Length: 255
Picture 1: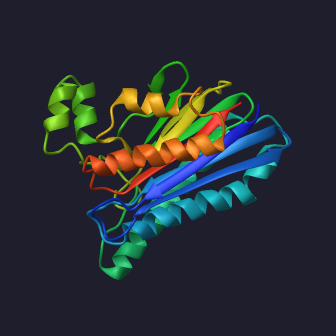
Picture 2 (picture 1 turned 180 degrees about the horizontal axis):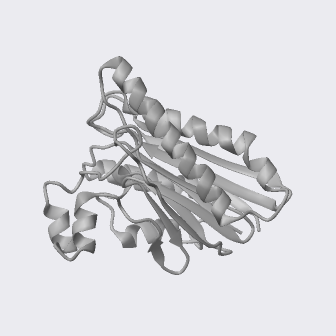
């Protein structure tokens, strides 16, 4: 299985700083070709959110360069990825929190990360950035760690009520601004001729699922040029509709 990749970020129409950070990599390993992507959304209401998001991206990049190659000497186990990524998130939470205390401020970031091997995907999520799998349907792989998502899951609120609730952007946890962070981890079989999409909440607020599917379904993304063009088009559509947040999206297509 081969991979096509694309990543784009935009400051949007109202922010003075782009607090999103992202990383997409492809590598040859003893287990075959693999792809890796991480997307972080620094907290817009917190000072220095871009510092938090960039710190997490660098840590995952360092893990990929330093620790991951040795894991490829044998079949990769879910439990090993789970252990290493959760430990890294715990350490990052403390590091960013302590940096904020030293500066007299608070900062934090969401993080969604995916590793795709020849037959498996490994996915981590903290916050409300999302991962999707797109085949002949659009499937959300992550669950938002937000107040309204929890209330909907508990049956206390309908999805329509959640969309109108003033607390809809309130996160249950984020890296650097929570006392303790417990990431969600997801594992599954990697599909051929599928698109795996990571996005910040700013990318999806004013787009419909049908619009995302139309732009990013596998038949629409024939090459990396098409991936870049369609990403740009949807980012621009977001801006025309008045999305005020930073806007970021990363794509991995399996071939």
